[in-house]
Length: 360
Image (tube, rainbow, N blue to C red; front, top):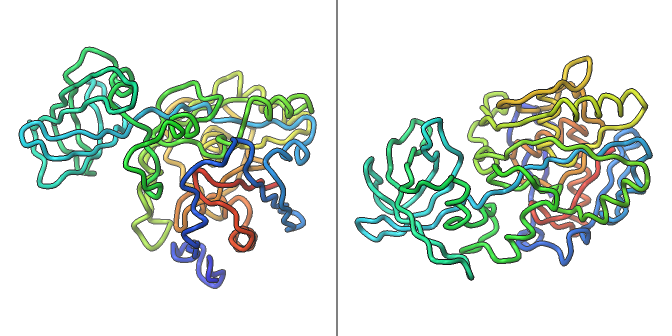
């Protein structure tokens, strides 16, 4: 099996490719949140151990801190029709501008025009009937449309009525199931704004977190609202030429102070997910974690100097993705190659609903 050829430059996108049998892509979640497998990679010994996500507390130490991304996935996927013609239309809500216009990407047969209207209606089973008209205002250079909903309700309120869970494209379901509504969301999600889940956090149950705390492992929360960059592939051959889309993040003064104390007391900052790594590294200096709020377009590639992330819990990522490149930067490209080859050989489940990897 070819995978991430070490003879190629770390700047060569093709060197982050690998072959994955279709049957290893997880299209549905595991039977229970903490039922996934865990592959533990030790960077100092280059050893690999196979266990369960329930064994996670055994690989952490008292004084360590699990850092969780508390973003909440919003029902950002929209299915409707062109009001004038009845033609099928699909869109993805990305956020809104200062004027209350929705920022969206969309697809339909034929050419969309400024001034055209789209009709959205509730489709989730058990949802009361609701319909809203959306007018197309402007198409921007990057293909993102500005649209204005004909409603006085907040955007999130409207989305809750007409939207559905924005599952990744490789999960080929016409619409999200009721199971998706529950499982494509972390149990600690509290701040709405993401259009994709921070998937490493999907494995945690309240009970697993409590077991960690009982062992002296603390938790802290940051926020990064996962955006369109998650869905858009890298379109250049050299990763140094890739431009990341920015995402909103926040690290509170309380969290920054807590994490700096963890480090001062000899504990490790254990990032749950690549979004948490990007959040902390976007708000870190040589003196530690700094409170911050704003937009980050940080693209972590091999050679990056990590200032805050000591360990990382993450899922298995798509070939040629910014997430696989980040993990390769964190653990070393050859070690990640070795881990992915073994994960494929051992039948691990890949991507959002798949199994996990702990990098120590």
